Image (cartoon, rainbow, N blue to C red; front, side, top):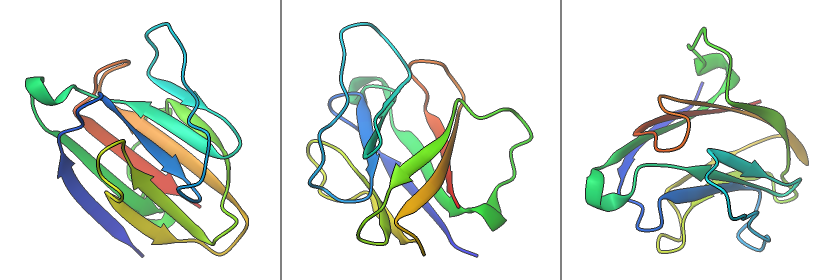
Length: 122
């Protein structure tokens, strides 16, 4: 079982979950908690001026939330890794995964500006 915990301050109030850094980031105009494509998940979070964000990345064996995730979908992982990064940090954390497609679930404590985010892969 693998679990990574990080505390970050994201300048642009979001970070990305992807299978590589070479992806198109899904963006849009309206306020929304999560945007996704087959290759990237854009997760909104608390802007850095308002405080830090606690992020955890875990495999399915570490999942502990009983609530429904705000996101549950498949992510292309052609390099066998799930990577968390933002516009200024080349890597928040990463985790090796066995396949070229990986299930990703995301839980947050707020619909658009969470400061607690749990990401579970597998």
